[in-house]
Image (cartoon, rainbow, N blue to C red):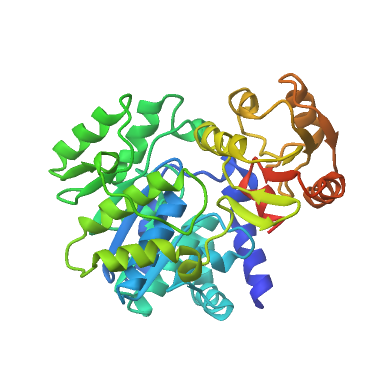
Length: 402
């Protein structure tokens, strides 16, 4: 198979959460464990840091990778979802896995993958772990896909684990309350493995403390730390992620990382790891900003930051996925902006007509467009040099623009 045929086959096996949503979610590690056995347990052949949480886990993962790269280590990085290309999910020292490696892995194991009926995410985790083992990385940063306890990545025994924070997202899988979601996220806390919690939230702190006590895991709340470091990642919210990353590195045993490595790693995240879509400024005059924030907690912070910007008029290109709780996120958006409603180009996308109707209930007005690109072009055409165009509401909307 060619690379494109290979990707098409992977996407077609079982629903892909990125595109389909709930039907792709599996509450079971049986398949992942079976694949690990087929691959001769690659997860045991490299050291790792496990990163979970509702918001910030992607940025934190990239920060950790950048710091360890600055310290001279060969660093694997596994994240999801991808923005533009599937190979973004699996990197070593910022370089994406080659298309040829993806194709050869699937060809070699295709019979097993079909017989076992593995999902897209399960086989991608297997591919990442197999690649990191083959390439003999010094350490891999592994971002949780969804939840924690039953996520495919949870077969690793890391050197240290990190949970950034808890918010109301993916409630149809993880529970309707913060404590229920925290219970699922706390599933990555393992026996005798230290755990860093990014934010001390009174509704859920006890869940992490209880689980850590049961597992004899040393727990630290990063939000208690005093040190401040700068980062090249824009967005005020990144300061919380910086604290989480620094606290994790400081508690990582067996690796030599100096303060200078931490400082340089945080200042060169984009250069070292090629992270995109986090308060990313695409152009000036008019200023165009995109951000992948897509739930109540993330959007609250991003909308607060947007209010600090200086502009004559604000144009918002907005699209969301269909399982999003609109009553929770639409009240966060400014009523004074002009809206360009669109549907991200995936099956999970909410139609632009539905989004427009629901937005009007919250006094958010604008026109609807048949595609993200059309919406963006219209916003650009209407904006003058003193205006701001913001693109967001979903990772998948941002992915179509950058």
